[in-house]
Each structure stands twice: as C-alpha cells, then as structure tokens.
Length: 432
Ligand SMILES: [Zn+2]
Ligand SMILES: [Zn+2]
Image 1 (spheres, rainbow, N blue to C red):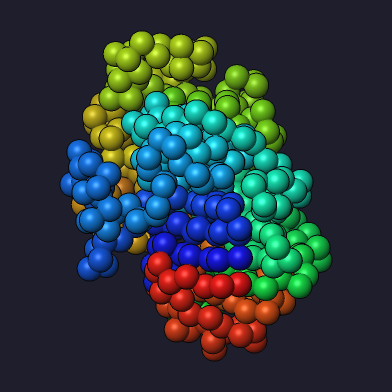
Image 2: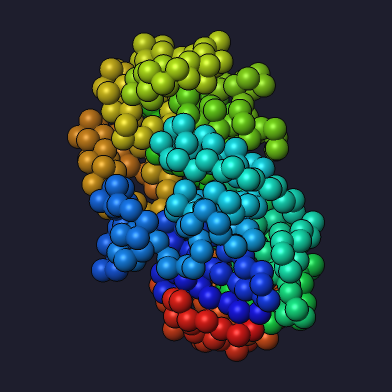
C-alpha cells in the first residue's frame, strides 16, 4: 500500500490524501487550503478564474496524475465531512470519479451551492453509513462516526493487501456526540499500521475544553440575566451550537430567531436527527428573512426555499417592540437588516473560533456593533479534540506508527504520543 499526503502534513486545512494498492487508487478528502504559503488567510477569490494547469502550478490544486481529466482511473474520492478544508476543491476533480460521502453531507453541499454559491455538483454520489464497510477497488473502507462541529463527520479504516491505514478526519470528544467518541475508544480497530491523526490543537494551550453542555449552561445564564437583545454570530452549520442556543432560549424564556438559511439547514438535517425546525412546529422558533439573502433567492427563482417558512416569519418591527425577548442569529451580510431594527443596546455573542475575528469583514461587523452600544461576549468551544482526548484516541487504536496531519505543529507529536511518529512532508510517498 502506498500513502501520499498531497497536502496537510504541515498545515491545518487543504487536506488531500492518496492511497494506492495494486491498480486501485483512492483520495481521502479534497480540501480548500485555509492558509497560503506565507501563513496568511487563503483567499480563493484571487484564483477563481484560473485554469486547472495554472492552479496546479500555483500550488492551489495538488499535482495528482489522472485526477482532473475525464478518463480518470481513480476509484473514488471519500469526503470525511462537510467542512470546506476537506471538500472545497472537489469541483475540479474529474466528474468520472465516484464521490463517497454521508447522505447528510451531500445535503449540506447542495445547500452550500445555493446559499454560499459553491459549485460542488456531484454526479456520482455513493452514500456510506457508519460502521458499514464498503469496497472501493481493492480497498475495504470502514467509516466510523465522529463527534465534530460538522454535522456528519467520519474517520476511516482503509484496508488492502494485508495492510491498514486509519485516518481520523476531524474529531473531538466534548460535543453533543461525545457518546460516539466514547464508543470508539472501546471499539477502535486494532493492528493498524499507520494512524493519520489530526492535531489542530497541538501547539495551543494544553487545557481541557469546555463541553457543549457547559456552553449551553453559559448561554442560559447569560440569557436569563440579560434585559437586552442578544445577537449571535456563529456558523449555521455548527448544529451542536444551534441546538445549544435553542435549548438555552427555551430555558430562559427567549425566542430564537434564525435566518432563512439556517432554517433551510435545520429543515434538511432534521430528517437525520432530532433537531429544532420551524416546519416541525417547535415553539419559540421564528424565521427572519434578511434582505440580501432573500432577494437573492427570489432573483434566482428559488422562492420556494423562502416561502415554505413564511408561516413562521418574524419582522424587524416585531423584534423592535420588545428586543429583550429575542436571541437572533446574525452575520455581517445582515447589517442592512440590523440597521432597521431599533434597539438601544445589546449583546453580541461571538460563538466561533477567535481567529476569524481577524478577518476584515468580521472585524468591521464587531466594531460596528460595539459602536452601537453592544457588548461582545465570547462563548465557544472547539470543534477539535484537546490533548488528552488525542492521546486517548491514539491509545485506543495503538497503531504501529502515527503520522501527523491537519496540524501546524507536527514536531510536537513526539512529546505527546507514546507511539512511533513518522513525520512526512507533502507529496512524500510512504510504502506502508
Ligand atoms: Zn479540518
Ligand atoms: Zn472540520
């Protein structure tokens, strides 16, 4: 078995792994980088109209033989979860390559095409399910369900020719699927040759992370004691967080106001889990129709995606009547709507990774609200495992060797894990 990490040995994001056995080849993830070569935020806009050969020579697309031409011999690309740093460059891959993914992940990618203007149209989706092995060429691939900030996340055991590789994907043990993580620690595969384990938090402060339940309690306390409106800036795809917000609203007598994008996400995903969705008559849940987003849907003839929530609509005027009753999902594109909502003061709950605060649009949005008498309150926990969890996970598998991936600090693995560490570079071929 031959293993090549095309990108991800020395950075977080842009993950692309290739495994070959005999004539079979598979790709694991095909992500968009989060940083450029100098370490600054990667801005895809500057590459948008470049051709595939240009993107390869610029180091944006990995240089993989037969990945982009129509008669590709790659047996499949497996997507671990719906975060762009794991799927974001997929639209460039040959449409002949079957895409293996969870069904909810495909639903999220389809919503992204509409709401975030991505173009990931998958012609050959093949859905896998947790713990059910599938055959791809000579490979047997078994997905394991992960606790992560993305809704539908997996790790994978890849076996062929008597050898095995385990790829952790992105995971944690302190979210709403902590039970899935615990289950894994008792049922992890054994005799694995190589474990590719993510190390997002390696090199950061080594402390135990807050659980999502603790986040919910913090929100309840804040909402109970606030006599003003609460705006929340979070990812509408961080379903654990959306659930915490909704539950905290119920416990504190507030009404949760989601925008039409979040409403569509919850509506789609509520087929797969018990989630608050306006169409399933959850109480204290209202839908706001931000001008930019809603007019965009109508302009593109997608009225139905807005209209189906019209029975649950709340207006800016209604919110303005008694602002302290509401917790409202907001983001920079909703400035024009927030301007028309009359509130004297408020809280902005910042509920995402603190690093995004440095992005110009976020910075400007936060400062704009501060100038309007808003207090900024950080309430967040990571989507990734803390150090103790990483160790427990690796010990549960106890592989012959560990390969760092999805990390800026591969040199620190040796001091954390007791197993042998193999530090690879991007594009280095390893014979497993
Ligand atoms: Zn990631
Ligand atoms: Zn992720």
